[in-house]
Image 1 (cartoon, helix red, strand yellow):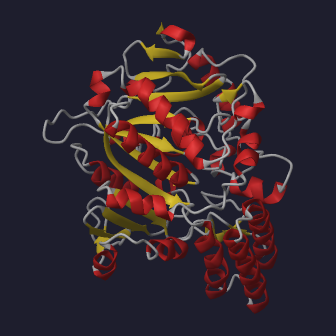
Image 2 (image 1 turned 30 degrees about the vertical axis):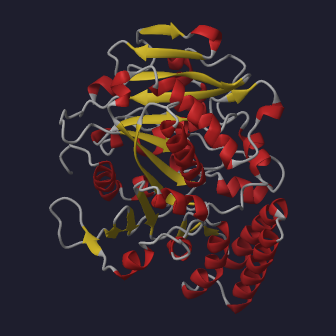
Length: 460
């Protein structure tokens, strides 16, 4: 990991400008990293960052994979959070991460949609309003990055998503498949992995009350309030009142918090704001629906300043990292437009994407679903509910298969999870993990991603 250690400012770069001013790319001198902007639409600029793995294994029978990580929110930064908080080479104190997913693949982080993280729009009318608009921008970015690089085209791309990123992932995958078939995009799509993903909001909100009641976190009064609001959301979705459904979701989260004495939506065994490893600290997401939107966008304990280090991710990304990258405009603040990203997507926020998962399965695309056991916001109970709604022809065979227990390392006595697979659908149950599986169970997550990507790297 030495090449990734702390050469964050005093490092040499070359600059490549593409004709037409649509993209600008910088590369670290040792070629271990590339990053840049793609103008996905006029005045709409998307930032990306690619790490090449120092653990790369050349195996013609198993090409070295690339993982595209998509963060949730909407408005949460993959370049910031997924990279420094979860699976990238360095943590928020700029120390090497032993469990980095670079051990299994190259990593491509994108600040998606435009307005997220370092990505920005020059005109507020250019924020996306739907997941499919976000997918179109991401497809444009992939075309710009992959079509000019023959080496990248040799590696299968796996789209791995977390939280709301799952909705981006399935819409992007369908858009990418179409672009590949039409010859507009030159890449191999290896598959899609949906981690604790907001695929069916209705199923999740209906899971919260019963789950918390069984855990003694709600009583009958709290359950009745929760179920009543969940039913209201269902009726609003049926009526096409999608913004109203988002408002009711916000109201339901507040009711759940009040009735449970502030259960942590990302680990139902904890209180929100506790000192657990995944207690979540604030990132601002606008002034409307303040409590729920902030709660939904809180990410990981390392957002807090850490003694002796730059644990504050906002300070890190707007400080030393911005200086390293060199191409972030002076007037762009990391996360400065995130509130607008969420606001503009609130009409799409509660719309399910089960049909898109069905389409991917029908096309033969490998789809992996993984869920943390103690997540609430995207509970395993809710995930299993939407999976059972799939129309995929292999569903019944998948459901009747037995699960295989999972372990890590040499310890074969402690169950870390379960796994089930049939044809091109895989499901991982990750024990002891909340919403942020790579943080809570790094060993099992690393093994899992190695299996998903068929990485030639040796298992941990």
